[in-house]
Length: 76
Image (tube, rainbow, N blue to C red; front, top):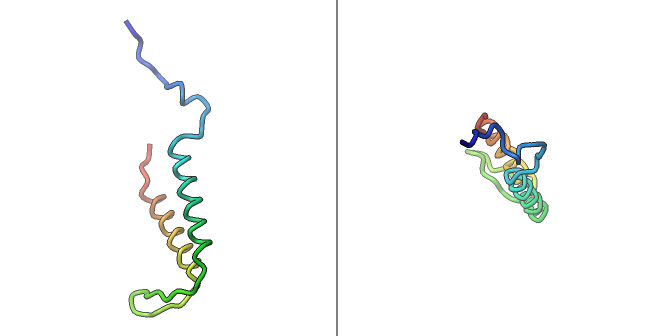
């Protein structure tokens, strides 16, 4: 008879998982995208029209996305 496993061998002290790798990859791509888009942009926020550097608008969008992802993440 085989005994049930209590822990997986990959859980012993490893913190680098595919989830971390994918998160780092997406973060690097987002930073490169923000850095490459530095021209002024007109952005409509419901009613007012705001002109700001495109990198600032993209940074705000990334931060809001991270905050939403953090709030909606699954708890283990």
